[in-house]
Length: 354
Image (cartoon, rainbow, N blue to C red):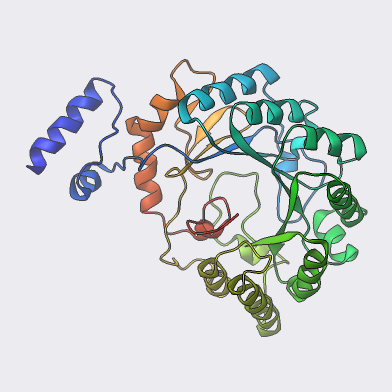
């Protein structure tokens, strides 16, 4: 029976056809393939690598990737809408607001039926752009704020005034009917003690908080084992770990009481272990490439940013076919066997309510 199934898969591959069948696990493992459980529910569009903040935890600003034209992204949105129907679409960067057409892209996605969110450091959100973002129908603005004090945020983001700009962006959105603000915070040794104050500030303003643990610098797709040894933001002693534990205890308590914390309790618990053993597999699954699909600024289609892409939007192959073909199934199998801790990142974690 298994041999017959294997032969059918090999025949399909020889003909270049998609592999949309959920084969028995033993057969899938033998061929190193995993079928998608369904259509993607979340789309990530990384529309630019450009950024003007030299963040200590991110080196995307070093990339020299050229932006794709407006028309290319509009076509991608249309193709995704025709294929997926309603779904969620998140616009990220770099700093996506460096694209002057960002509101045009987001508005088009809303008109095509997507629930739209975007990530920003807040610097470029003046009155005009805040109003245009609201007019575009954006549902959530994820504003980066890694602490409750200017010296902490400005220090890690690499530019004085960052904290003030993010607060100003928050205030502008507060005066508008939408988008809803969710503050995205990178948790690290230098800001753990500020989490109670940050959470109280957001509670008073009626906003939510989502945290994710410090990870290897974003911008370089290659996995970097041991990166934390070189990071001065990584906890180095028991005092650092106690501060992180205290912050995580608070986040878990607030989440369990239905307070303004988006992270799942399981994720919070795993983050605690991660800071003590960053290279030890946590046993959790990863949703990369199973319920979401990502596009990088070059148009490459990715199921995981740390694995090779499965196609490109400049190709003539429909995205729907790319999602099911054997290369995509190989990537999913690789994800299913992955033991890295990037499954704790909010774009990958399997159980959360964002």
